[in-house]
Image 1 (cartoon, rainbow, N blue to C red):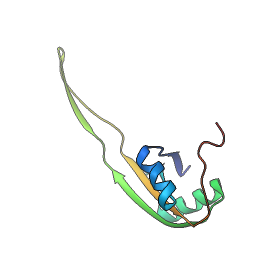
Image 2: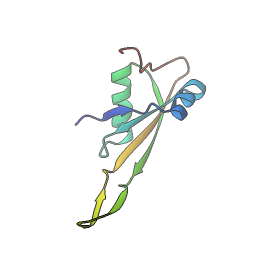
Image 3: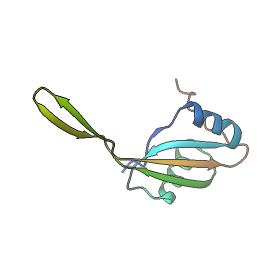
Image 4: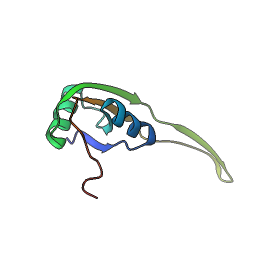
Length: 96
């Protein structure tokens, strides 16, 4: 089971990483905080102080088409906000 799916690179998370050494990741919904901490430390070589997680349910949508009403939903997601110790940096753009 791969724990980290992808980093969250938005304007808000970039500002948090510059000010507070916080980084966001989409993670496997079955992963717990200890697994997330170990995965970030192993992947990026930093020391993690704190991990906060958020579960997002699916977004449900209804479309009215000429063949009838169609119901759909997106996948549920889990986000993790990781606090890194002072002096450690995660550079997402290094291997571009």
